[in-house]
Image 1 (cartoon, rainbow, N blue to C red):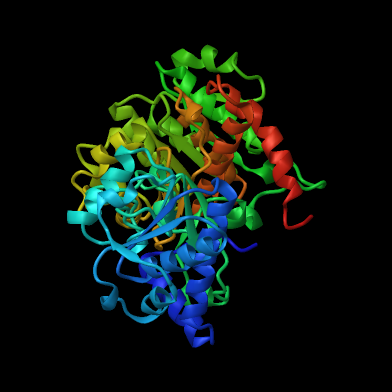
Image 2: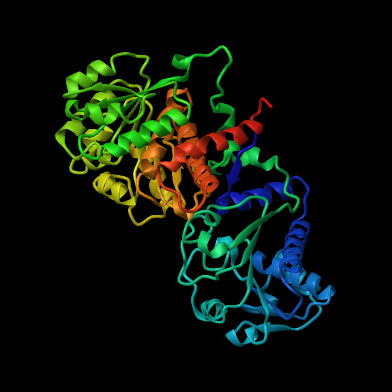
Length: 496
């Protein structure tokens, strides 16, 4: 199955160049792009006065095409251009010449009387903050609450990062071409795009073989070929044995993780708990095993059994020397490890002592606060960079897969691959949901998925389960909603 790739600005330009080299004229691409914009305008909005605001580059050329086609369908169209029409070049100049009506200078007053604005000012290629007339018009579109359809990316949004460059259009819909960009999925850009429509404009899919993108939209096509499917002749040990460290006070966290791990398919789940809390863990779920660990040597004995092939430390573990020691024991096994919550925070004063201990497959699950604490002193992390960049830098520095949580969760691998998750509903923001996610990750690792695929799959399943349950969700509901998601996932398995 072909993953849903996301292209950078540079990769998009490369795709255009490769299409041209394959014999697809740039004018044909621009005509198809403008036609897609016009088609979406007709589909979504009632016919009425439309103002097409055009920039000086190819984004503006797309706008001229859309204007011409909408006018031919009877729409009252005004075209406003930033800059001089005679300064346009290449395909944009050719399509401006095909526009047989007036072109007015761009200014806020061109919006008077408009029922729809088509934003063809800059698209994804903008690299500096909007200023002057362009910014005034963008701000006026927002102030007037005008319906807006954006071409490629709303003007003022950086295509690679989703950052707002000074000001940005808030579109009801964005029409982009060939493949989406990171800005369509990460905030704040995602919040300005509205519905994103990807139009096929004639770029051959084969150009991706030359581009070799490394950023993906998270979904089953990215990892389904690795997803574990129980065999008729299988048994519980073949489905992996996950070990989850339980804490002394916040006992619910490890119990939620264990429930999530069992629902996500781990054949056996053992909770390694402090002796005094044995009864709490033992009575919670009869299907989970419970063993006691008084200290790090006792934990080393537990994980000495190599059938215990994936380990989770952190949820409710407590910020203590004990957690620090147990984390090191887990990492020293060289087996798949998931570190979350307290197992990250406890190393904030000396992150290198954690990172240098990572020798096997490892997944770090920080939210933004934990990320800032853990990586504050780590060289190579630009803490003012966008989320995608920071996650990638952290993955390289730690030699681990880093899942940076949020509404736009990013999963980054040390080899440069990254996935952006966009299926999480707002009601997933509830206490304990992250513990369930950690349980999903460790379960998929135990069943043999590699660290990047397991983390991406777990994140998507987490969002899908929350969506399936609906509003009113609490963390305990997530494992119970998962079987229905897994049943639907089986219907799209490559084996079916």
